[in-house]
Amino acid sequence: MSILSIKNLSHIFESKVLFENASFEINNGEHAGIVGLNGAGKTTFMNIISGKITQDEGDVKWLNGIKWGYLDQHANIDRAKTVMKYLEDSFIDLFDLDERMQGYYTKMADGEGDIDDLLDKAGKIQDRLLNEGFYEIETEIKKIASGLGVSNFGYDTLVSTLSGGQRAKLMLAKLLIDKPQVMLLDEPTNFLDLDHIAWLVKFLKEFDGTILIVSHDTEFLDQICNIIINVGNKDIKRYAGSYTSFLEQYDIEQKQMNESYEKQQREIKKLETFIAKNKARAATAGMANSRKKLLDKMEVIDKPSQVYEAVFSFPYKEVVSKEMLLVKSLEIGYKKPLLPPIDMQLSSTSKIWIRGTNGIGKSTFLKTILEEVQKLKGSFEFHPYAKIGYLEQDMNFENSEKTATSYVNDLFPKMNIKDIKDRLSKVGIIKELLIKPICKMSGGEQVRVKLMSISMKETNVLILDEPTNHLDILAKEALKKALNEYDGAIILVSHEPSFAEDICTEFFDVVQ
Image 1 (cartoon, one colour):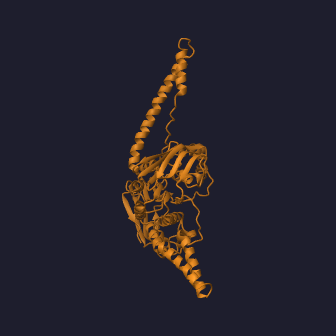
Image 2: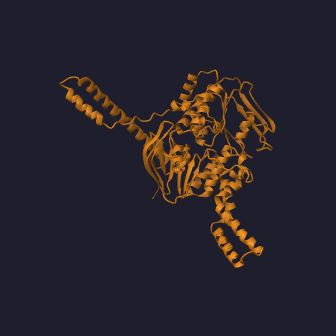
Image 3: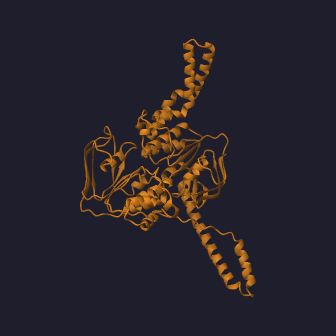
């Protein structure tokens, strides 16, 4: 049974045609992965089907009465509430009923009203609360919160004190607690560690409702999805099967599309040449005219969209030393230590994968050795000639109206604009993206800008905190290649084993 019908969907975003006359359906119980390159329009598509924005043309129809929930990592939530109060909002109707029931009991205690009538009303509410599991709400909330690591924040913690990544996890937990019939998930694994991703995979595999997931985590998609929806080439197309199966089908299609386009272009060129040579000669003008009619009637195949692959490169500043970083009995945290004292050594060629559960303190450790967060005790020391390139997990571009060009120009004012644009084009920031405010770029495009700015100067240590968040598969492969070619040291925090294991030769487990 179809629960979502898309017919002739067309939409233009900032002069770019994202999709044109796209049609397909999503059936009840399907787990669909939404894939495509950075900037193809995946999040725009999710915003359209969730009603956040209106399409230019076409119809988007949900089955009547369907209940869906949308994980939008850019959504605003009530930051004045505690973590528990925010999660309890999933059951606000039941809490309101409980409050009404308590009111009836209060009236009875005060001798107000008809006792039998009040008992009857309170009893009916009590039955409903029992049937709907009201008295197990806290247990249900804590089960999901624990599975995603939200319990580590503290249930009495104010939402306003959480980081962007923590708020994203909190919103995901609430959506799972809501248990809508359809879940719309935009990059749900971005701020989860390996254990929490494994928990989420199990939860979603057992979910008998419908799921639409935007994700660049191909292993995650392969485990959950039985349908792939590809956004690209001005189209949105449905494929049956896993992500791996989709890649095989898509590769064949692209080859056929390119061959058909090239074949038709050769035929057009041949016809145009014949017409140009023969239209002026009386003896051949008729044949030229007939070929002109044939050419006019031809349904011209659109040129396949050009894929602008990223090319990353991190220039190396040579340093003659074996030891690049020495950490001794380092205690990190804010008011109290998050972890036991840390001891670690980094050589000038070490490539270390920092592993640990989300929220345990991996990012705080990086910020501490970069002196963005003050240490509590112990010591750390980089080589005096260390040149560090740092990619933080939170992009902090939400309110930046600067373009990518002006952002890089502010960092490197002596560099001319043409060279900046040339460098940005190498990482896939081209054409209209060069003048687009960074805050309006996709997450993957923002990461590309940050990585490009790091590559503008020589380094001998790269510190990368979840660099693959938002990057599409081609960009991830390009980044992996660049890091494998890099001669300096790397400290990498990543929730993607397939990425980290192909780069790092050492690992450091952060444990409490």
